[in-house]
Image (cartoon, rainbow, N blue to C red; front, side, top):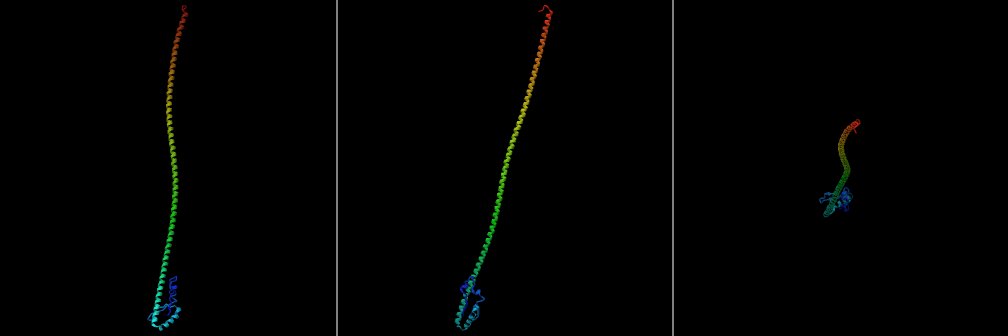
Length: 245
């Protein structure tokens, strides 16, 4: 009896699937127990004639040959199942590996997307920070401008205060000068009055003196006139007296 077993190439192909699984509809093998019951059919359709011929020969074969064939078939069946189990395990391992790789890829993709989102968020934060820095710089420039303006105003106010103090000082000086002038004017007026009074007094004294002089002159003139009158009378008496001198 001839059986079909998968080759090593079929058992270790890149898909990890045995030839019997890939062509399960094409190949079958028949296993027969000692009692003659059919246990598993794995013979291929192409080998149907040879299988039939082998079945025709089996009844004539000795019992020892039948047991040997049966043991060989069981051994091959075990090897086949072992290869199938290994292939299935390889397939499962590959599927597991693919699933892990898929999960890893999805994880990496999610991490990449997260990094992209983080990068976009970071760029947005950088833009916001730059905008805030520009705003702070503008505020600082405005503050400097206002400070300079304030300093200019303080300087101008100081100049105005100094000017006001100078004006106040000048006004005080002018007031003091005016008071001094008024005081001087009063003093001059007083002096003028005193001078006028003194002049008037002098004039009055001079007038009085002149009046006294005039009175004295008049008195002297009267005395002279009296003397002249006396002299005239005396001369007149001499003229009247021939004996007189």
